[in-house]
Length: 379
Ligand code: CAA
Image (cartoon, rainbow, N blue to C red; front, side, top):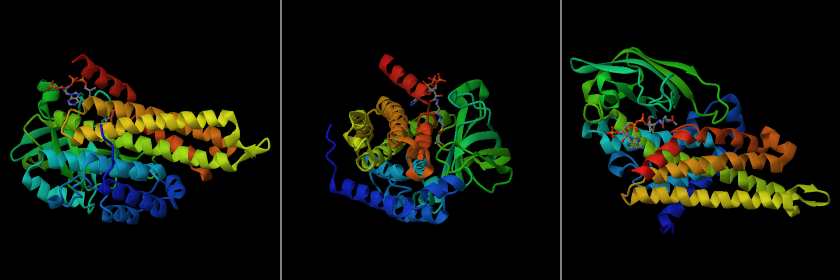
């Protein structure tokens, strides 16, 4: 597989790197502390085209491929993984799903504004009792004339507070189990839709994660995406692509921690020489670099397969599994390389370690990725 990056890929990578260095780096510790992502920064990300990268230009997007998106995700997440997840959910779960499966009317009403970053979207699958076991949806959407009546609670929703539009997965025909599930486009502000508490998280703290409550929310029938009962397939299909985005986020987090460790190890002296000259540190750096390179190959491969229209379910799961596992390992080692300095906020690596943890959990835990891989192997 050829990973030779085109001029366009390199330009996207450079623009994202520049934005991360000049705009995201300065306030990243403060944003993590106060758990707030400045809307002005989000507007700049929108202006740069980071929120609808793969959407066709006719719908307000950048018309780029998955590899370009991955390269940008990597650069943004090296510096600010919170910005990474805001971007990832909007791009790969919300915009991609709407563009692929939405009607022309739905695209005109929602996709154009989501892709340009005028509004932000959220993807609502998880519930208090349906995380990994995603077919067990308790949220219901029962038909009632020309609309659905939506009732239930969603948990751990990325962009839960800041989003204007939510793709909500809900059960319509319980007797059909996962084949009775639908996905509805729901607007904030509709009667009966309330935003619950914002979670006080370990990592990606600048991004908002909320529970969302629906009490007899009237959703027009025209806001259902796809055929009746398509909702679970929709969720699985968007998550297959979403996992490539999260894998790129994990890769970026690992790279960020590695770059900081490399720099620090050349500057910090112990026993009369830079710690980079001690074999104990060299072994750590070598292993970090090797794992990162292996993860990069898996992530780029999954993106390429998707761009080539080939089956990428297993490749995406492998990329997400491996990149998130090594992100956790690399960031933990990065804290160790930094010693006492690694344990304080100023040196960034403790934040990256906290941020890495979620990549093993959301958009399918590592255990779910192994399940997906095994099912593909045993097909
Ligand atoms: N791609 C496409 N279809 C898939 C699929 C995949 N990866 N995995 C399962 N399916 C399909 C199956 O083919 C089956 O369809 P048919 O009945 O038509 O054959 C259907 O889905 C049900 O699958 P199973 O019978 O295998 O159901 P299961 O309950 O045994 O397993 C699961 C399903 C794979 C475990 C699924 O529930 C799952 O992926 N769980 C993890 C959910 C998840 O990733 N949540 C993330 C939350 S979103 C998030 O984190 C976003 C954020 O804010 C950052």
